[in-house]
Image (cartoon, rainbow, N blue to C red; front, side):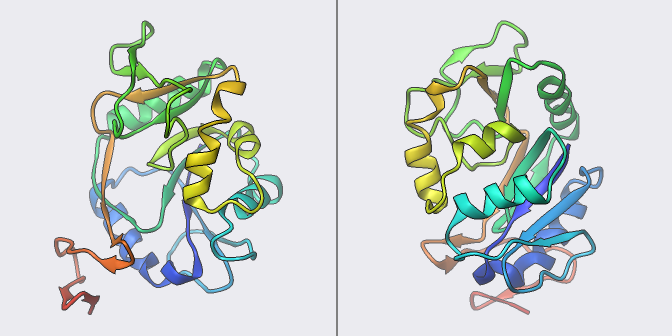
Length: 212
């Protein structure tokens, strides 16, 4: 399993910030790969360019999974979700669970929204109701690669992937789980298109809503 970080050209410049925070807040992080569009992302990790309309999340994710990714599972994060804290033990436990139990297709790593029912297999997890809104969430999570490919649709942006995709999840037999505790937390760097305050880290300083 690898950590797959999805980016659009509009956000490519914050790649170094994401990378610095990831290394600081989760030093033992999984091997990582970044999905770029046409612009470079300046990080010391592999960067795969998957060109298409910037907001066409569904098409770009499907192309990445089809042509550039061979692992059966992945952990997905968006590049504007700047890592804040990480529970390495719970993250590795979750990776082992999804990789060894073929009945599980997805594990959400932030209980937002929280799971609906307890999970008999382990008290650290609950079951997501696949008939509820945001049963498909692009919050940080682990996915069976083929399942994520099948749930994505060409032409859908990230928001439509969540809203429209949530109406498709119940057609798939895999169980969707969610941690009861926060396995990884993040700062939303952009809220409604505006930069949100973020605590300083390493050489990053925020003044007047921009990086310096």
